[in-house]
Image (tube, rainbow, N blue to C red; front, top):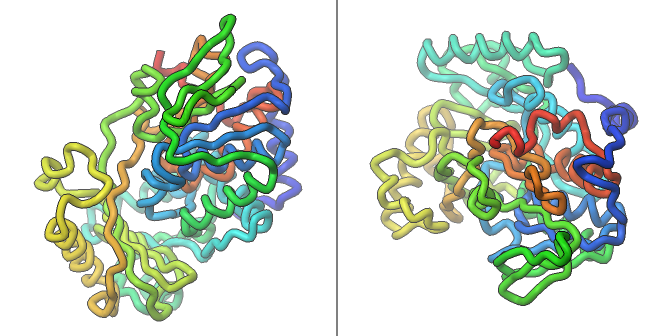
Length: 399
């Protein structure tokens, strides 16, 4: 099914907004709102709030995009793993929202879809079953099963091993740091502030209402605080809502000739090429269990060059089994991104029970959902409303 046009998309969001002064309360647009965490989710929320006239301050303990957003595969998708249906539908709207954002801030998005297959017959059968289940949804992102000959027309440099391939036509990819920086430029243009390094230390209340956020650079006046703090969200809010995070290993090549047109979701490794020529490799299953002891303290960089090279070699060796010219690539960097994993796999978006001045937004699919989550969260906060699109993702489910 095709993506809806911008007018239909906006109308849908409006219809799904329900006035409610119970849980949220109407918020004066000139209230001071602190967003904690300048990853793709926090920055998108801050950007949308600044567009709507809020007094926004975005803070990060290191620098924008320094955590998971800086080491991500940067894939925008609404494919079969996004389930149940409310999660998948939100991801579909995420694609539509990115098409709006693309025009608003001149964001580079490489559209063209993704091609996915597995080596084993068992995994292939599961993939085809998942696609059939996806097509039972009331609305789903355009998906087809193509044969090897058809797939080679779409992506000549890939050996599909005589498999059937799932072609998800609507998928795209971004440079996440570029997207964050563009939104920050607009936040500042709209009168907002971005502070880093600035580490969250606590909340201060006066007469039962939030009055400031305590940080390493002092107290920041605040009427509302939004936690977009990834793997630290459960700890900071004292809510048991996260599973232990896992390391996502990303290898980025130096710019090279145009080798790929689309996102390749191959056996063991995901690959796409950015507009500037860099190729991004994401390890499908994360670091092997034999390496987890050396990553137990969640380092943001590899403990040694030798350790990093082990991961690069393994990822490249896997990619060589189906992609040409991998051996010619020069590595720019290898990085570790600690992926936020909500306890039940679904996004966590909303106000924790009993915390009327606090909002949380944390999810595994941060890149896919950032554009739509920014829109929906900012509208809930500033319009004093609740949105039916988010009812399945509230933190209250962990009570």
